[in-house]
Amino acid sequence: MPFTANRDYKEAPRLVASASGMYYRDQNGREILDGTAGLWCVPLGHSHPTVVKAVQDAVATLDYAPAFQMAHPDAFELAAQLIEYTGNKFGQVFYTNSGSEAVDTAMKMVLAYHRSRGEAQRTRFISRERAYHGVGFGGMSLGGLPANRKQFGTLLAGVDYLPHTHNLEKNAFTRGLPEYGTHLADELERLIALHDISTIAAVIVEPLAGSAGVILPSKGYLKRLRELCDKHGILLIFDEVITGFGRMGTPFASDYFGVTPDFMTTAKGLTNGVVPMGAVFSNQKIYDTLMDGPAGIELFHGYTYSGHPLACAAGLASLKVFKEEKVLEHAQSMTAYWEDALHSLKGLPHVIDLRNVGLIGAIELESMPGKVGARAMAAYKKAFAEGVLVRTTGDIIAMSPPLILEKKHIDQLFGKLTDILKHLD
Image (cartoon, rainbow, N blue to C red; front, top):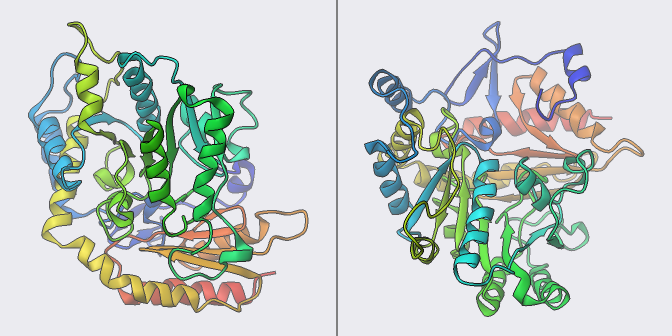
C-alpha cells in the first residue's frame, strides 16, 4: 500500500466503503468526518451530484480518445475554462494524470524551452529543503524530504536546495503568515554565485508546503523569489497540486500571494478527486518559443491518458460547481472561525505549534524521545476510531477539509481533537 506502514495497518485495517458530502462511511455505515478532503483533493465534498452525473454521461458518450495527433472537444473546452479560471495569467495547458507527472512535465518543458533559446546549458533546478514534488524520479530529486529519497540511490544530478521556511523559535503559534523568514529567499543569490547563473534553469517551490506538514512562507517571501528570478532570467515554477482550486480561498495560491509564476503544476482538486488528472499551466512565451522551431513534433512528451474524456468531464463539472455554488466565497466565510478553532488548542499537552492559512491547519506535537512520529500517529488512529479523519507527517497533524464545511463540522473536528490531545501520552 502506498506511503503506508503495511504491517502495522494490516493488524487493524482502516476501511472506507462510501462517501458523500463531508463524510466517509465505513463498511458498517459509521460516519467519519473528512478533515483532509481525501488527500487534499475533494474541495467540493464527496460524490457531488453535478460531477458524478457529468462523469456518468461522459463514459456513455466517449469512453476514451487518444491525445496523440488527435483530440476531443472537451479537452479544449476545459483548457479554455482553466485559463479563464486563472484570470488569463497563463497561455497554455498541458494535461497529465497526476501531480507527480505534472512536475516531471514542467521540468521537461523548462529544459526544452532553454534549449530552444540557445541556452541548453541551463539544466540546474533549485528546489527547497522539506519540499514534496511527487514520486517520479524528477519530482523525487527535487523533493527535500529525506524519507522519500533514502531508499532510491543518488537520483537526478543538478539539483540544489534553498532552506525551508519553518522556524518554531521565531514563528510558533502565528495566526496566518509569519513575519520572520523573508530573507531566506535571498539564499538564491548564494546558489547563483555557487553554480553560475548560466547553468540555472528554474526554481520550483510549493507556495505552501503541505506534505511536509503545512510549512508557511513568510510575508513577502514568494514576491522576493519572483524578483530574483526575473533579475537573473530564471523560470519560476509553483507546485500548486495541494494549494490549487480554492484551498486558500482563492482559485490558486498564486492569487492569494499576488505572485504569478512561469509554470504552475496542478492536480487533485482539478477534478474534485473523481478521476485522476493533472495539468501544467505555462505562460505564453514558453509555448511560443517551443513552437518557433522546425516543422514536426515540438515537444516529445505526453501520456496515454492525457486529457482523458472522463477527467475532462469531471474538470468541467467541478469548475461549474465552483462558480454556481460560490464555493470560494463560502470558504472565505469559514476561515476566521477555522482559525479561532485551531488556535483554541494552544496550551494542550505536547502542542508546540499551531499554524494556519485559508482552510488549512496544522498542529505540531512534541516528539517522543527516539520515536519521531509516534505521538501524531497515535492521535491519527484515535481520531479515526472516533469518527474523524486527519493526516500526519512526522509529529504534525495536518487538516484541509472540503471547502463546503460548516461551523458544525469545525466544532466536531476540533472538539474531537481537543479530547484526544488532552489524553495523549
